[in-house]
Length: 174
Image 1 (cartoon, rainbow, N blue to C red):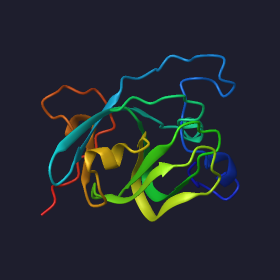
Image 2: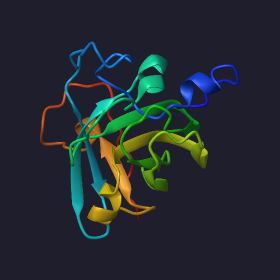
Image 3: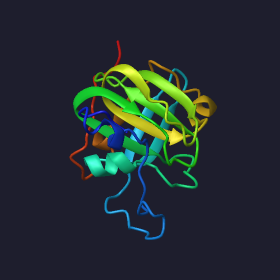
Image 4: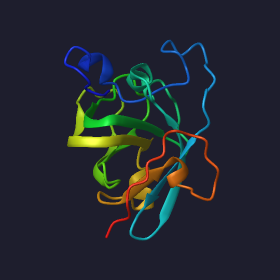
């Protein structure tokens, strides 16, 4: 999943978290409400309600062992502080789109339809504020492209009362 330190790189390179235990037998309830993420493209605004992988353990699991992902679901991997993130698809059963987000909220890089079970690392090659994983092919379906902008939490849906400390409010593009 995320390359945090050389010794942790292999353990943390797996892209994707699970509400299931790694064995796939014990279902765990999601402990937090979904976080709204809004992506503004040249032609539309798209909302996703995503899970958040906050801890190194959650980020290590990511979306591993999932058999499906809702069209407007996904998982957000916040990077605080921003850093170069590297993901792989080991033990991930479904293809994913990985959106690497600059600190200004723009999409730095999109890896579309990352291949399940692949051990090839995927990275934007620059420090990012977050990585958003969506169902494979969803970015192309919605016309989401590099340079489009994201916000999440209360900043994504300012009219809704969102109780979270994960507000990402980049300034609008000029």
